[in-house]
Image (cartoon, rainbow, N blue to C red; front, top):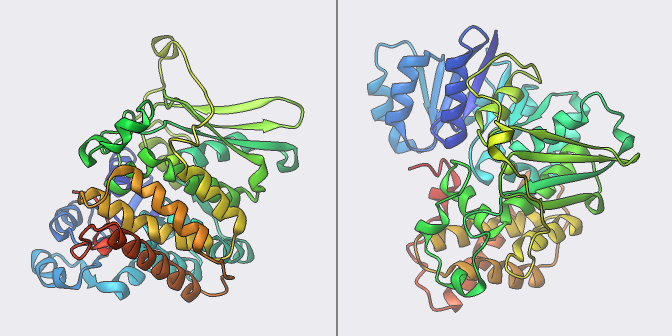
Length: 402
Ligand code: MG
């Protein structure tokens, strides 16, 4: 029985993880759950899954959550300390790190310090702080199983292979909601259109990141850290069907791919169970019905953000943390209709050209770069004569789910 702590239980990954638990009740027991501010969801889920501890990040939600669970015997915590308590709970074997954005980094670092096995859905932590996270994982010999579908696919392709024989990693990208839109159409794009992802059901932040291709840039950096692969050997192909989740090219010219329906429950289950394959709730794709699988090069002219994040990864130091912080503010501003869609990539280009990367030695360096990126993005937006005073990127940082 795997005893699981879910950080970000009310988000898209967290909710789908609970569906995986529903399918495998004799294999996985939820011992802790957290949410950003959705205390009602947390209370309902806690009464169903009976964890030992629930924690809500937003302190003002503590009292209503505690009252909702009065007499249940379930411990209730709040704030940053509450998240750390859930990440380090003695009874947890594994922590599912599924808080969105850099807000997920402190509890992830706490879970690593407590030597928990990690199922990682929070890609921003690795993007911004890979140089801190990965050496600790390796030095402590901890398990770090990727939940991101592309990285779960690469992991599956690499299992049983000699790592030195893998020549290239190829991440597939659906291309997002605006894959086939012209530059003129992109200038008019609304948040509502951007949130309509053709293949995947996900949270708001990541769905916008798919539309800009920022998400694939983040995933290139994530793949670099997870698989210790140089950037020059990580490629991206646009694959509109989202059936092939990623591929590995071996030096003898052979290519392995992992195929499946675009359903996050599959990589979540695989990551939680460390590569075991019990029957779950996901069917195999009907390839005859799919008919054709297409692949093409990404378009850097319409979607420059992929290249910008790749370059930030190659630059290293605090460059990815800075650009990621800026992106969180820009996505929030676009969702609030304060900036046009192409301004996200335009701002990322200008800001990354201005930023001089500094080394990352501690988590404070990461948060400082994140704050600087956020501030620079706010100033960029302000310079564009958009009102950004109401912008509250903090809301986006934890559980962007409606
Ligand atoms: Mg992904």
